[in-house]
Image 1 (cartoon, rainbow, N blue to C red):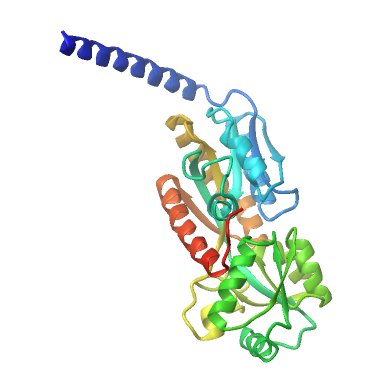
Image 2: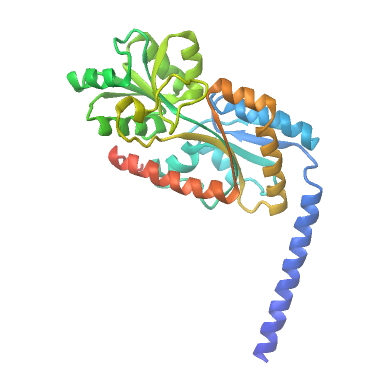
Length: 330
């Protein structure tokens, strides 16, 4: 009797599952039928903003529906990311964000209102931007070795600015740099890249490590100079700038920032697959290629499971840097 009931229950569950799959399939076939919203947890004009907007324009044309970008900054990207994590998993609310949201925030907060690994489906890691080591154009150094020598001659005298403050990617990258080079500098925290580099350009702060995308306007203005770029190989848009390993003459594994698309967990696979395919087309468009080159981004186009595995590896790298910084989650 029990065995019959078990078989009956299993058959009933299978029927429900089949109906659910059929419903999701029909749902996916009609997707999209209304406006898609892309939430960007940063202020307008930031490094990821053009990436999100170029993609949105492409998706609107290819999918035939409205695609809007909504800037929702605050709380080190927590506010915008939480909104997407709690959104219906129907493909109509997407997240464009960076490693800050998925890899770094778990190191800063004991209780995040979202789980980076469970509440999102990685779609496409679109691009990476190497972090540039920048100093004022008036600082009397011409390369990174000169800077290290200057810093060692005046321990605790030079300062460095960070975009985002304690625990931000730029802060953890500078802590890693100081440990690797045996230097000691004063940390000055800023709310973003622009205010940090404004102070570097004015000579009130000695140096900063920020993403190349945010540094580009200052480099074009000639108010700061780049001593090295934290990439594995030289960046095509700055071919004369050495990597850390080249500049220091030692093996150096950089911490690289990325930007990419994620969807709420539970989004049906057919919709996920469709979004991935369309985002990849947007990444390969002439408009995106031009934008990435201008802002110092390198195209990656890493998708799905590969993107997810990269996130796990990235979390481990940032965790090691946070340990070096004696960072304690709040």
